[in-house]
Image (tube, rainbow, N blue to C red; front, side, top):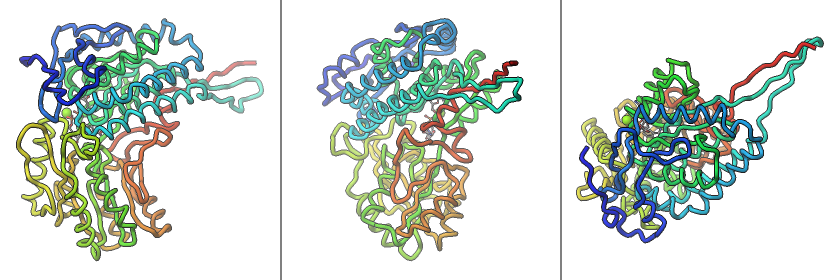
Length: 500
Ligand code: NAI
Ligand code: MG
């Protein structure tokens, strides 16, 4: 691809933060073995600001050769470096230092995230603070990873050790770059592993900046490596690499399946956090003051580019019309706009590709016979903006109710009664999340139990906290991240028999 020389003045228009502008001006490099290096091929690619389509920076296009190099240095760091000799308290300290550095630089990181991803600045701040919390949370676990002593025969002593898995390849998406980095790197390090992180090609910048902060935290070299590049090359090289022990992936279900296949070469451990088509079920006894705006943000937060977005809004038939009126009223106040503006709730989509994909689905919905209660117009001009769009007259069998759209688009679907709501809610190949809105406690618990999804929200939506596991049923993934469950992903168990 021919590279445009970035014009930071144009791409970061309106940004006055000196640290952000300084970072954008610095040449971008891969972090391998504690050093910042160019891609072996010398190639770079452009990364843009989706709000104005201007080039923000040129980023090294790492590929298989760079992944090989990163694996070599990571392996060395894991087996022979300082890393395996340090005690858990020291690992905890590193994680706490990284957390403090992220928090100290929250404004800078949030602006950079918004410039590169397009998410509303308030959300970028929230995600950045959540990333710091995630590092702190796993700092706590570093000193609490236990084995067991087992009731062995008296002539033996048997115990287990929980040991790190080794070299971890971690492939993250563009929708929540800082948060996803933390979900991957923090538990991996807490358990004593080393990491090769590949940020998404759309949003490599905050990972590179956090890479600098990790260097500042004085982590031993080679423990965290960052290789920017495309999925089909750098990502695929990680998934199939014979000397990577574990791959953790967040992204599309399609690529999740490719990764699972590629991992079979050396049977690496795999955890996958994939797509969703989450049901948000609203009963007539719900507190509408809360249910309506929260349901709206359930599919509009981050312009709907959220794996757990509540994109199928199920509403009991007899109050469907009233609910749609309310929802449309709130949606009419939300327009996709400048993400750097503190009052903006919905920014642009991340890329032209996603813009075309989402508008394509909106067209499909219309062709399938669904009606737009609001939105549905293709916006012109610079930036990949899509206004909140609500479809009614949707059947759960339509494409717009079955496939992940990943834009601020929801299908409102009526249901008859509780059984029907659960049946339709579960009638999907996905199972990442769900919500139920009701004041009836028994019903809330019944529905929460009946829904086949990894997370269920009762009278709320999109609440995510590192203390609690996150992941999918069905084709929404394999394994659970966050909470103590990440320890299962990043440790393996050894049983030791000692003859007495
Ligand atoms: P993607 O799954 O292709 O990209 C996610 C990450 O995987 C990126 O880092 C990418 O470089 C990497 N990747 C791509 N192909 C790879 C391969 N063959 N081997 C290894 N790594 C690879 O997602 P994409 O194409 O950007 O978005 C398409 C759709 O995927 C979205 O419309 C959305 O429906 C879904 N998606 C879901 C996400 C989630 O959070 N669950 C995040 C991003 C996308
Ligand atoms: Mg893709």
